[in-house]
Image (cartoon, rainbow, N blue to C red; front, side, top):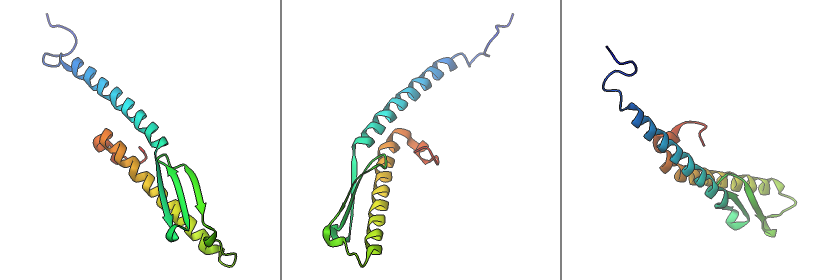
Length: 117
């Protein structure tokens, strides 16, 4: 009489599934810890020789914008706007790079999935 269930040779699959679940749980815990670290770490971008400085977290939250008095020219507001925009974009690029570096070690090849981070 044949046994019901998995054919011979597949009985060890349950152990592999258990290990896979443990690995997934550990990865999830490690990712949560890395995300907490990203929230506390900052990047800084400066433009115009320090005329504008932007500080952002690894979660892309702008924490500070500093504008030197010398950067404020009422006759050239467009230049100041450009410097702020450039500094913010650079801070966001640095935050992305920091997150990619921190999470990349945890996710292996999964970090290349669009929208994952």
